[in-house]
Image 1 (cartoon, rainbow, N blue to C red):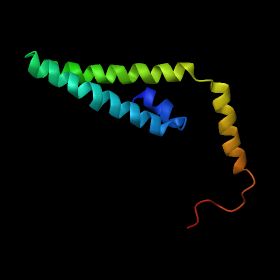
Image 2 (tube, rainbow, N blue to C red):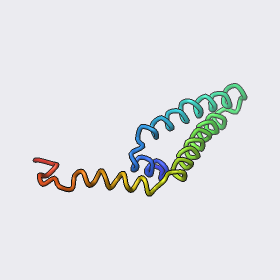
Image 3 (cartoon, rainbow, N blue to C red):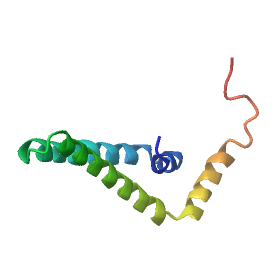
Image 4 (cartoon, rainbow, N blue to C red):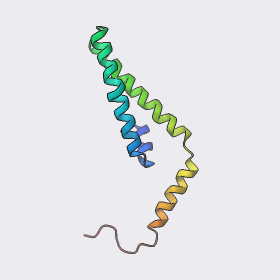
Length: 95
């Protein structure tokens, strides 16, 4: 998994990452690849260029969200989630 996705998924942004992934790959990459590959007669090179374009777009969007995130606020959210389980004495995994 690419580092940009790992950061986003690790922060709990799983749904957001899924929407970006689907939108960029299926909404941009495949149509652009078909357009370049078939309409402009670039063949496989056009299809690959379109798919790479979708991946680059996904990378830019996820990087933008990663860099504009207030990481101190994310740490506070994580602390709250951990504090919720601090006083639990029973094991979470009962086997």
